[in-house]
Length: 132
Picture (cartoon, rainbow, N blue to C red):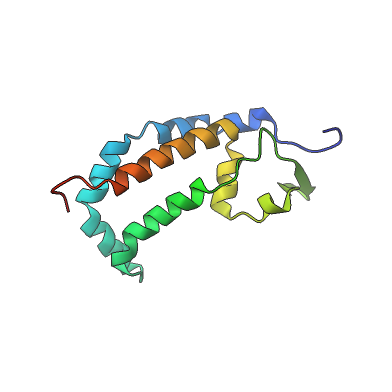
């Protein structure tokens, strides 16, 4: 759209290495580590003053939060605000920090990361038989 400010596709490339690193993490191994060390993770969560028995739910809630990030298309319009930019779309601007950061990686990365998160969520919720 003429006259608007839009993120450059060059901007999205700065996330290539980080996204590749995340996508390179083996989901099955991550789930195995998660289940194996859950008691320690729950203990650490409890030391933060949070209910240890709710650790699993907190992890899944964080994943679901990111998965619910809208995908506005190739280049959402921005508005200049001093030296920073904000989204012109009030619904995008109202998103939390994690969702906005995900959007900043660009449409291709958002799709790839969400696919990886869906796979991770499935692996975390598919508890191997006999494990606990």
